[in-house]
Length: 440
Image (cartoon, rainbow, N blue to C red; front, side, top):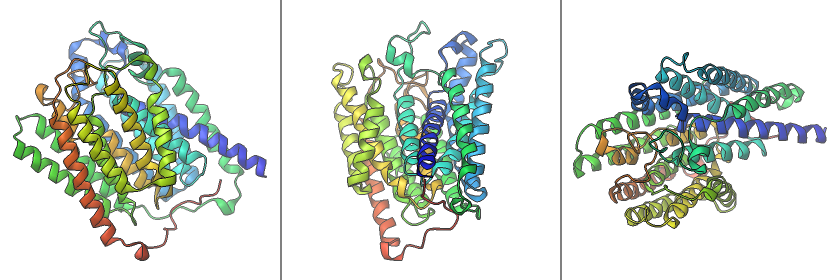
């Protein structure tokens, strides 16, 4: 039996990592360089709709996780496998340019089923000592790689190995590899003793409302901000409103699970403020290594408060290096290493959260373009880093996004203090029965 359990853990961890990687890349880097041949109008419409598609994917991730908690772990595995099959079929279909009539439709399919895959898989591996870290590291590193993608060259082809590796949807072979891996993960659940199978419970409404407030307010406020020449007062009001919504969303989650949501809001903004491109080819695996290092540091010395102050420090770094990032490659390298380590550190506590859905709510905040992204796109009136969605190595830089991220991080510190005051350790309710066992 110990050998079987060890084998089960390895299969689950492999499935979790692959599934999380393709879901994160589909939600953060949905553009395929081959789509440039579809014509400027179709491509422009696609990029214009990307923030809404990301928001839809984030909400579907949370809803899928909530439903999976209510229906049970085995159902979560089946849902993750089914989503991967649909994504594979969508990618095979999209290989034929003649069949790809609407790039927006293809992107929405990828975002929605990528979100379902992410949410269901989070519940499927929740509490597993090997699979849970594999899922979190895969999700965080792929989200970070997608966020750091450099704008392709004007010729429509990637100008470097880094751009080629990070641009576009995940390779078809990776999606094809994830399908049998997730199928194996679903099948081996039958080998578990029934005593280790947790029964489904009630639908967790609190996390769904939390995500609805966060995702909805972020999507609406960022689109409103880029459609006008926002004054400092308007930016301040929007930032204060985002912090207030984040604090409310944190209180809607069980226990102190809201802490990881507050840190996710802070890191999403400070990470979006850094100068991340251009960077040398050899730095391609740096985000993954940084996330792994940060995760294991967080497991030993984790503290949401340290994570929030780290996010504020990252915002200060982004503000002071806004004019230096293009001149010296050390600035992007330091920035992406810091963001990766901070992400891993802040999400290390998610492995011990009371609810898998709370972790998905926090991940959802990394998927939706945040206030700082809107500020960086104000010059071309789009919620993006550039008119082509990705980060532009030659784009105009400003210290304003960095300072705004500092203010948001400090506001989240106040939200964390409120959460801790209202949820003291001695008064936390017992773990809900709708959560799963932590045994392998």
